[in-house]
Image (tube, rainbow, N blue to C red; front, top):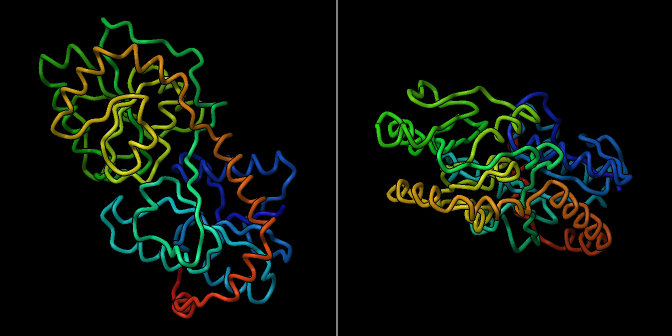
Length: 340
């Protein structure tokens, strides 16, 4: 199999998409496949769309490039669109439109959470779909040398985000920072934030570290007791998966895809009941620490599911070619005039 992934892996901390491409590329190569990030070859089996924005410096080909490739070089390539974004995530007003528009090129759509599939992001009459959940590299993010909370020391909360967007949960993180200024909570908990911050935002009572990746990040996460994610409308993310994989029970907001990834491995909260749920975690920590050892979302599982899907699509290649030629895709001309 030859797969072209429309994304160039970036050095340094760069967010969950970068980790995904790195993991999938490694898995495919280790299983005897060829992986490229361009459309120069005329024998590509799978074209994987990662991001519809050509303005993203990591994106290596556009919708126009895909259309040109299919029409002039190799009409037998299967186009797979991995949807991992939405406007709801950051209150933007362009992403859903771009996702649905580029989806007109797609033979098969992969969603990284059921919640995303429920949004108006794709064309179900033109593309079938699969849900494949994200997973962390357990060679790095694992429970090795993780110490449990002894119940008497401060309960150490931690989170990390690449994107410094307020929608990542800064209403809750600010609230925790304020709680640490009170005698009641200052003696009971601590909070550490790793990653980028919204412009002008500063913590007063919490620990802050700039973005980390790989072993440095995993080692830091394992120093803490509970992982918290307050992200709003999270498409899936990698942050909570990495925290859970390092042995940290989860405090997770009832929003977006978080319940799908976190249910059974921690406690769900909203803005109104946070302190109650935090106390409940402190009382039941040992239950969730035991459960978190069985957290299932690994990069190996994720990549295996993509590999199996790609092989199934190749086996059904004639069906997809025939279906593509018979379907009317009315917005192809629009795609051709947009810089996507």
